[in-house]
Image (tube, rainbow, N blue to C red; front, side, top):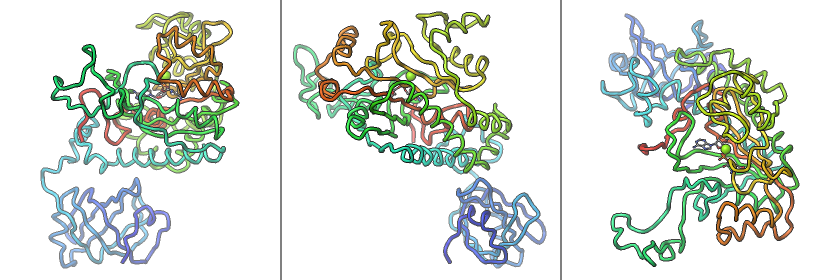
Length: 466
Ligand code: 4AD
Ligand code: MG
């Protein structure tokens, strides 16, 4: 008989029918005449309760199985007055994979910190199953949202020769043997990368934006959705060394279009999660350790149905100066908007996501379009409660001369970016885009507070296990 997913059993409720399920045991409770086995197969937030009659030939064996064992069960689905609408009466049970007393996921020791050290097994817990299913649905929602609006999915490269954000936070990629630095080819005392694999220095990408711009200048509108890498030494609950980013880019558009697109995209994801992951969200928000509670679902509905506020960086700083709150970092025009400021704006002042625009040019990357004030750029960040920045974007400088002037100011070499400058030489048009940190979006929607818990295998400073 073919295996049926537990999710399907809960949705179709095939009462009185015989089906086969396979999964991992969450618990076994024995009474005199029966055992109750709780089985989860990953397809659904809820587990299936299986009633095992003591008359079953291998009853003793089944009754002694430990949590984490894998079994297959042929049984009859019956109505239940338990938490689930249906349960199963076992007819035959096959023990597929036993476990031992050493199985690390025992009921008591499952703090999120502990589970980070068991990243290969933590997917078998309710919490990580829920997060993984939400993550899957938000990825589906992403492709749906952009595709419905006529954006093409671009697979931007992962290996790159340029520091597109100019922040110097790049992981080098080389075929030189790092164990034999004395053998590196050198010219004038410096490593000669022309002898390296690519004939030049290469890195893992920090963004797919620049290649995204190339494709937007022909396809009209594109989005990327891929991994990006940053060697910033930020050991925070919101930074990863490897994270996934979605970067749309639109030709013939300015900052207003992408600000609206960003807000619509966040709302679309919220709606998708509320529609397809309600069990998961309810579970995650009702955990004791969850900072956000079930009323977060109402908050999300409200955000989905309301317009995002907009404020310029200048006005945001004025709000911070006047609010009377003591911050660790200074506020006022010319200071960086730090996470504590971002969170104050979103959580306490606006009490909702907010779009901040027109930042001073010194805080932003070289490619952003200069405003007529010569001081600020057409940049926007979308900040959300609990996290701060979730989206960073801008209108791009489309005038060759202005872009070159900015690169000179920043002492950037133009040669490696000759192709990027070509976009401004041949049929240049106003264009704009943004990047959304996928993990930050998952955190915002699920209420998870550490970014290490919303990506399957987190990479952070000093941690590249699994
Ligand atoms: O603001 P960022 O650096 O912008 C860019 O990379 C642009 N190229 C985007 C564009 O205009 N196409 O990063 C964009 C978003 C941030 O808002 C944040 O959500 C996320 O990426 N992000 C990180 N997420 C996890 N860990 C990190 N270390 C992150 N750095 C940025
Ligand atoms: Mg940013």
